[in-house]
Image 1 (cartoon, each protein chain N blue to C red):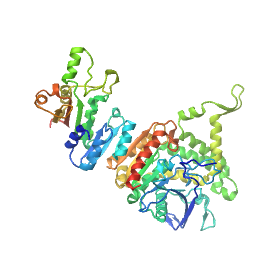
Image 2 (cartoon, rainbow over the protein chains, first blue to last red):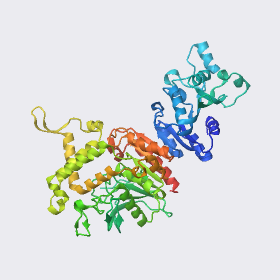
Image 3 (cartoon, chains in turn purple, brown):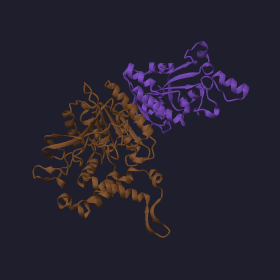
Image 4 (cartoon, rainbow over the protein chains, first blue to last red):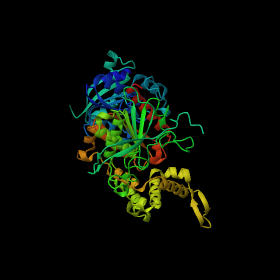
Amino acid sequence: MREDLRIIADLVAPGARVLDLGCGHGELLAHLQRHKDVVGYGLDNGAEEISACIRAGVNVLEQDLDEGLTRFPDASFDTVVMANTLQAVHAPEHLLDEMLRVGRECIVTFPNFGHWTCRLQLATRGRMPVAKHLPYTWYATPNIHLCTFADFETLCRDRGLTITERFVCDRAYRHGRLINRFPNLFGTTAFYRLRRGNG
Amino acid sequence: MTLPPDSVGIVTPQTLSFGALDLQCGVRLPAFDLVYETYGELNADRSNAVLVCHALSGSHHAAGYHAETDRRPGWWDVCIGPGKPIDTNRFFVVSLNNLGGCHGSTGPRSDDPATGEPYGPNFPNVTVKDWVRSQAMLADALGIDAFAAVIGGSLGGMQAMQWAIDLPDRIRHALLIACAPKLSAQNIAFNEIARQAILTDPAYRDGEYVKAGTNPDRGLMLARMLGHVTYLSDHSMGDRFGRELRSGDIASGHDVEFQVESYLHYQGRSFSKSFDANTYLLMTRALDYFDPAHEYGDDLVAALEVSRCAYLVVSFSTDWRFSPERSEEIVDALVAARRDVVSVSIEASQGHDSFLLPVPRYLTVLSEYLDRVARECGQ
């Protein structure tokens, strides 16, 4: 399993009801079903991804995330996961609100646009960054709402979402002193656990 | 003619007779026959049986040919056969004509043992629940404790849903295709217009047309024409017929017949020759009355919580008779009931009829899902 999904899996409580937004090939849900007795559902809108989920034997609903989560009642899930997808949706701020309406807790990961390699490319060459953790050219990227860790944390504060845990790491999912000291400069990926209100 | 290699080939319908069945309407049917076909082999532990349920005008003849001279195979030959989504190399497929039908199972054209005459309009109302009970009796007779999957489109999907709720121990997967948890008012309205076309045909003779030696051809034809329009999409009719003329000349206004008119006339006429009017009334009423949530306090979630099987729910983008939103109602209730579900919406231009057609992604999804079902039963 992808290392980032393994990290997320460790954050999910056994027996939880899980909604996985942008579930891709269903790796996370398959793992959670097998090892944590989780009742999980994935949302995705790619035909290939849906097929992979069927083969993996996981629950998947074909749906575009930009349609929102209105189909789900309040507090119908324990944990809502969105791995590496926040930056690709049309209204990330609304979706975050929705995630914490339908779930008691959410886990969000995304790539850091504030990483030093991005800053350097923009500052020295005046060009849109293309980095190992953000490998797309500006005209052919699914990412339409890139942000830095600092931006995301500001948004959470503004919308009354509490960050209960944060884990920042590099592309190999390691974290050392440099990342701990300057996460927004040296981290490529962050894992956030969020709850509503000032918990 | 040589039969295609991915056909189940020549098939022969079989008939089984059963004892009494107490119907939901309170009437006891003293005895009944069911005509059915099977494709593939039942495995040693009897775990690979699949039940295919037909829709409004279907029959037991779902796949293959009855004779080499048949022009067309069974109604779901696209999906059933060796190497096809419902793979007869792996599954033992059972397909029957429902109780009340007109293709060999006991129905309005059968003799009522009490009078020695055809039931005609006096054949009791049957419901989807009754069908499920009669299908379970057929399963018993065939030695099938539980179906690996019950599969159906439209009214067939409703039977699969009722199976899941009524006999949770006897079904492992329910495949609900172009289905709805109950009909909308608009849907019932269409059915009522179709029924009125039949009931008001002078040849209907209060349903005693067999005795009178007549047949409400006009009524059946109109009912079928109306139904057909609702099964297609505006787009698919436009694509297929446009405003092409079959005959005549619009400029002179003489004997104008559009292609779409000719098509509907043909469909309606052939239907009126092959389908029984009382069966049509009975089947549309079964559709209208279907509402599995009703006995659970009108709570679909509570109804589905009783079920234990996993579900595949498939809808088609241009289906306006059983729209994708109706499938979503089922899916949302399944999620709330914590059931296993895969939900797929297929882009297809052919409306409700899509479920009978070789839409590539639809067949792929069915194959992938049923591959998982087959693996679970060791096939």
